[in-house]
Image 1 (cartoon, rainbow over the protein chains, first blue to last red):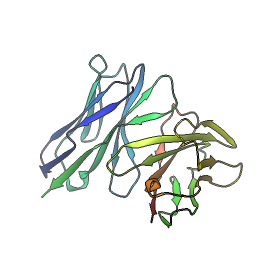
Image 2: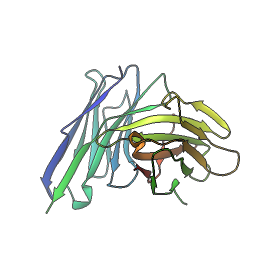
Image 3: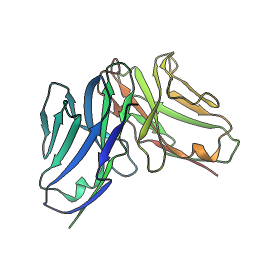
Image 4: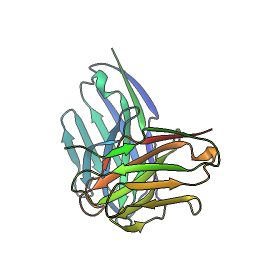
Length: 112
Length: 114
């Protein structure tokens, strides 16, 4: 069964600190992996999208890594800001279907 | 350059009533996707539509749920005879061409069934 598991479930950090969120997936064959940011009460917004041949991709203070062999991805946030408080969702698309498979997300709280 | 628009943002229905959720895709987008997010759960795919066609409805419950994307007007997700378990956030996304492309999400409709 295609699954996407994220850890930790929630995380609290101080403003200015770095953090890393994890994503493990069992989707195979694999097409691409995306990280989304979802603010409370809003729809998800794309941060990065990576194909199986890409190892890392950055978007400002967000850096995503992908290891297609171990089926793991991480999202690293540098110098966190209060506005980074949100749910971060790992999403995987398989080669066969049209659907995206979503993880449950990691809820990040950045405090001052 | 408006993004994906959904209305209403919040909808309250009593058990047995009908719920109609609307989604207007981004300008120039002809592909629409509906997702459901139950409390404490990840988004789950429901249906993928192009103008006047249902492409993939593998995530749609077999009964009470239907979706359409007419030639003119928004996409509609219709839930008949709602039950408490239908309470969730329903998100619509759109893309310019096929689902291989980037999907842009709307703000969601939060359905509460009393």
